[in-house]
Image (cartoon, rainbow, N blue to C red; front, side, top):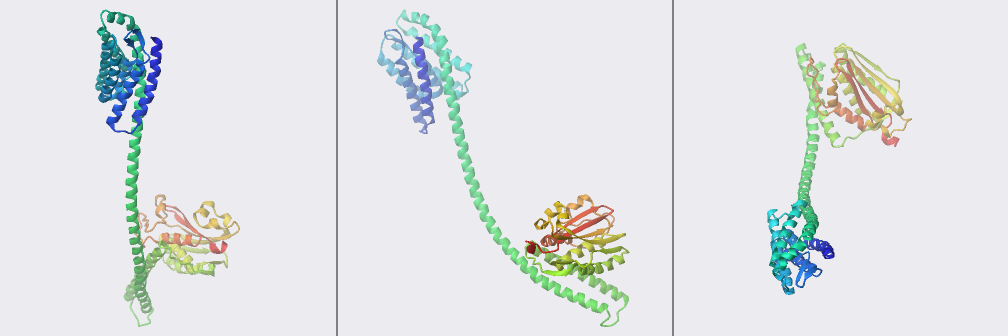
Length: 481
């Protein structure tokens, strides 16, 4: 009997592999259930080919395990098919144990199906104790079916086989149940993975279509933006002429009147005309700043590289700003070497210096403003400043110019340093009147410094003053390279 049980155990392992193969196929749901029922039925028949012969026509094998597990994992259709197949074969064998055999086949399969219902068609949820409980109940019923044997054989058979059956068959039920449960876990995991993969593919396809629509919309928006940019450039070009021409006329004619070239004017008239002239100059500066900003952002700034004496340029700046400094009673000095000849855009350098110098005078009420020029090798410039500018392209022996503007003015709070070089960045100090301006001066100056191959750095302490450094190469980078 024990050899027969070992042979049936090997059969159960093979059954598990076949079950996995059938369950993994992508047939229709009903066809899979029919195939599963045939599989369990044929496995039970195969087990009946290696039975333990108690007496002629009375055989014992592992069909009780196979059919109960078949009902548990196969469901209603599979259970019905396995009962029909196995029952037909057992009936064909005949013998004294035919009715007991048929009763065992039907009862074991139905018990497995009943437990499937108890676990709501999720047999993979069964624990080892639960599977062992199924095995105990199935084989108690199987032993009870032996009472259908001719009397008094039934009682004798039960007395002789109950111990090995109750010791071994429930364990076999657990082992086969665990194997099929693990297969169910694996198959369900694969199905879940497939669903997630299909869902992911759907999401990718959906996002791809959305991105295609967005790209199409973005392309259309880019076309509109290019057209708007073209119209903006046309407007600025037109307005720069339309606005600057009358402003220059106002400035010119008020200057003529103030000089008395068209006749004498009284002090009140001079005062009012001076206000008109200064307001016109201020408006012209604002317009020029906006135009420069537009050109820089569009990348249309053209540099006029020429050779010039930096000494003469700085003296022009100094003389222009000294008038304002003297009016405020400020000390104003210029410290520089003689005859510094350089090649760059003279007008743009003057624009940057005028902005730095005028800011220093504007925000200083007492003390002094000092402009200092220093010539040095690029190797003397701190690494972080070299990286910040285009100066990394210079070799160590190339000359650079550092123009610093120091003042003893109101200074800048540390939290305001971050907006110093931003467009339209305005910094207001407490207790000071709001100064005129667009907030574009330092932004434009920093952009121009970068275009010239240099940079501007700032150091400041609130209430003590500020120091701006304008560093640039003496020779255009294009010529150096």
